[in-house]
Structures are given as C-alpha cells and as structure tokens.
Image 1 (cartoon, rainbow, N blue to C red):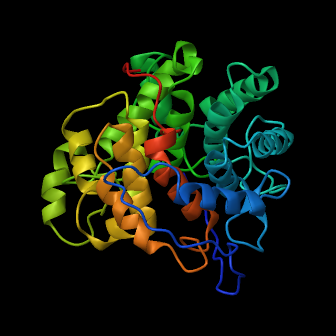
Image 2: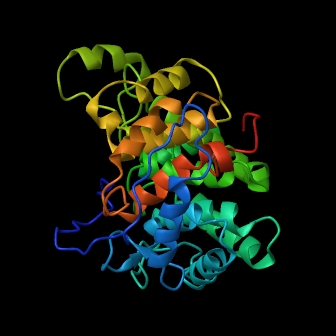
Length: 349
C-alpha cells in the first residue's frame, strides 16, 4: 500500500487581503457573547462566496474543503445555502464521491466533509436530491475504506473469521492508502446523527470509531494517526521526541466524531489536552477548534472565546484563510446559535 500524503498545497504569500474592513469590537464573553463579532465575519464570508464556493485564500481556485466550512458558517443565509447545495450536487463524480477541486479527477477524502455539509445544510433526510446524492456517496465511502490486509493475509482472515469479519479502520486521504484521523472523523461526523448511522453502515462506523479510539496519543489528544498499539503507547512516549504529538484540530475532530462515547479515559484526556496552555492551543485555529469541541461535550467555552476576541486583525478578519475565519465565526456564535457539529444522537453506534 502507498502512504497517504498531505492534502493541502502551498498557498504562497502573495495573496490579497481576505476581508473587507470591519470594525474591531470587544466583548465580555463570560456574560453573554450573543451576536457581535460572528455576524461581521459571516457577512464578509458571504461576500467572498462565488457560485456557492470559496477558495482557501482569496484569489485562489475554489475548493470543496473551504467551501464546506464557509457554507457551515453561513448556513442561516438561504441564498448562500441554496448556491452551495446546487454547486456541490453538480460536482459529484460518477462513482459517488467528490474531488478536492472542480475537475480534479479521482474522488478522494473530500467526500466525507462534503457529506457533513450536506447533512447539516441540505437536510439529507428531507431533500430528495440530497438524499439520492448522500446514498451514492456512502456507497463510495464504504467501498473505499482503508484496507490493512491484502493478498494471502486478507484471504486467510476471511477464511478464519468469515465474510463479516471487521476490524478497526477508517478512511484515507486518497484511495488505496492508509487511514488517517481527519478524513475518518469527517465521515463519522457526517453519518452519525443521521438515519445512516444504523443498518448496513453501522458496522463501518463502529470500525471507524474503534480506529479513532485506538489512535490517540499518550497522554492525550490525537495527531494525524498514531499507529502505536494501545498497550505500547506509554512506553513509546518515554523513548524520545519522535513519538506522535497531538494537534488541536485533529484532537477536536476526533472528539467530535466520538460524541456518542461522551465519557471515558481517552475522551477526558482529549478534552484536557484542548484546555492546556501550550502555544498551539492558543492560536486562532486552536482556540476555535477547542471551543467547538468543548461545547459539543457541554464543557465551558468562556476561556477560549475570551482569548479569541483580541486576536481579531485591524481589517476585521482573523487571518487570510477561509477555513480559519469560518471556524472562528462558528465558535463565536456558539452561545447564541448552537453548535452545527454537535451530534443530535447520544446513543453509541
């Protein structure tokens, strides 16, 4: 098998300012954050939307990942929501998946995050067009999970365990590569909370959640994919600096995908990691992700929101990237609008 590679390209530094000028506003989030900064960010995101899509940074080619986050941040705008759905449905490939960019060819990890957008924005269980698109995409995803065994080994397992044999595994960045935390979390988030969390898809989701639970870093949190066996994690962490180190974004995504677990040592250690003082958790992106994940587990979010406010730039943005500003917009609106990534289901898959 091939090892999956990073999905993002280099953006370069010569891009134009992403946001129109917005007033810089402060507020006391410990009392009532309500709607102050979030609508300004949302309005600026809506201005940058073109034909239902957004680029990673202004002036670049539109892509599916920033488009989903932009649409989630602007989900209360009917025109933006309609444009996003129309465009996304038109870009679905013949095999049921999506590519990272328009006309990029092979379907890839983007299928999972697009499904997440369709479930939240498109009402996948109530809109016939979205429902048909959703089902095609699920079939693609089930057929393209990472396969840890091949050839004789796979045949031996099937003979030994039977055709229904399953094991902890998730989804890769690209087809026929290893599974990773982020693409796996997107698929679980997309399907958990929908009618597709049951029936013939339930086994695949349980396998994916087992993969996430087994892939945590010691002593807590998630990186891209910690493949150290559970029983060896503590000893491996003591051996040196090469042991996988967790990241706020991957930790938040894994936790969001494991909402049905609610409690347990791995969950609690992941939540504790997000509230740590280290610099990576104090960045704009780290604070936004932390607030969203903590809110989903009914934990206090006053501190990360209070730290976010002073990070607003003079032009009103929180950075040049669509994803960063969309996540900040979602995070700042949590107290007043709720959490689009909080699962409506509480039961274990």
